[in-house]
Length: 205
Image: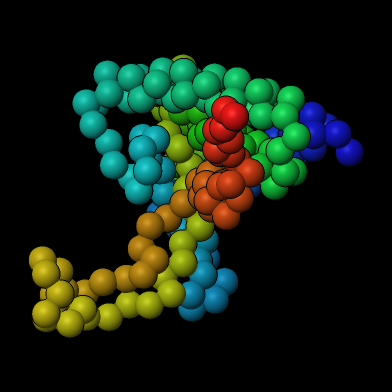
């Protein structure tokens, strides 16, 4: 398989999977609803305004800025991917950049379109292509659902700032797109020599 086809296949499959899972959660779960798969793995439906770990800033204006920034960022990633495809780089690097690209696209789809096609999920299951959507274009919320509370307990008192407090690892809820980005970055780290080759210095005689 050519590097171009590998990238296209990776991007299409991952974006479709991301959106299928999100739409299923959005149209079958009430906001805050939780299904326990294992003690250490739960499906817990939450929404956020698009920043990692649920952070947000600047209200609607900040949300719009974040979405526009992501559009510029994903454009840069696309050019990076196109340029990388033209080189003799390891296929793992192509997959890594493709995962980062599809992860960014997946969350952009939520941010750009979900506010205009879904109604609110508070106390009821949302409707796709609702007559009264909860927001507008560019003001959608990102759907998260994967929760891995692997360990929960009180931290030792000698730990600075957090000592003695109750802590859960891993406490953040994420979605497939977030996972793609994390895996992509990890692959780039593992294959950093192939992804970011150093130019050999020519020694003049």
